[in-house]
Image (cartoon, rainbow, N blue to C red; front, top):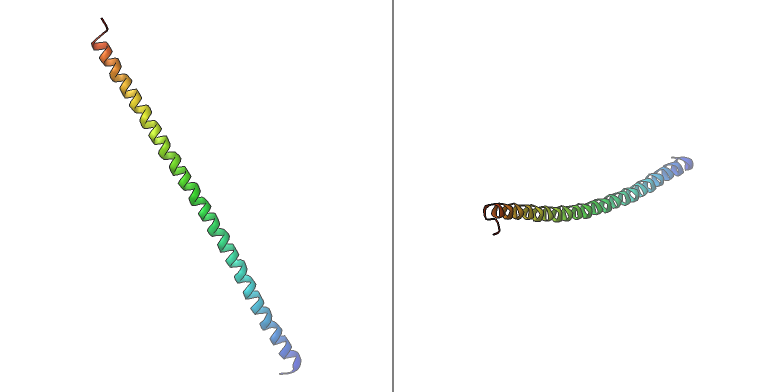
Length: 82
C-alpha cells in the first residue's frame, strides 16, 4: 500500500470511529430525554389518580347526603310534626 492509500484508510477508520462515538452520544442523550419524559408522564399520572380519588370521595359524600335527605323526608312524611 502506498502512502495515500494508508492515509485514506486511516482517515476513513478515524471517521468511522468518530461517527460511531458521536452517534452513541446522541443516542444516549436521546434515551435520557425519553426517560425524563416518561418520569414526567408518570408523575402526571399519579397526580390524575390522586384527583380521581378525591373526586370519588366527594361523589360518595354527595351520594350519602342525598340518601340521608331522602330518609329524612320519608321519616317526616310518615311522622309529621304535631
